[in-house]
Length: 144
Image (cartoon, rainbow, N blue to C red):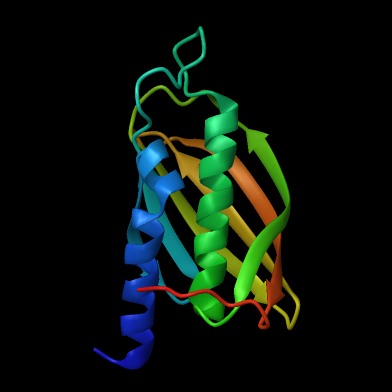
């Protein structure tokens, strides 16, 4: 395993063990440079009165996955934070787990552009997301 693969593996483990991820039932399923796949099995009580996962939880999951994709190209020496996110809710999510695939479209010196799709357990696209992340090399964090 080369250094880049070890770094991605450490980022994926750190991200999955992060308290917010554990609370929402989120885990990293696959991580490579520019691509993140994750899943979320939310705990009971996160559904709306119509039985679908509430949009606020899907939004939080989307933000986390966009950030993970960006981390896959910046590494742990940089800090990234989603500063803008646009969501399009296509269909309610009733079949769990929710799966997400996020891609980095472009990484600049200070900004990164990402997109993601959230799918229900049947593979139906339910949410389309685009995001912009801030990138700073002066406030990196420790992973691993």
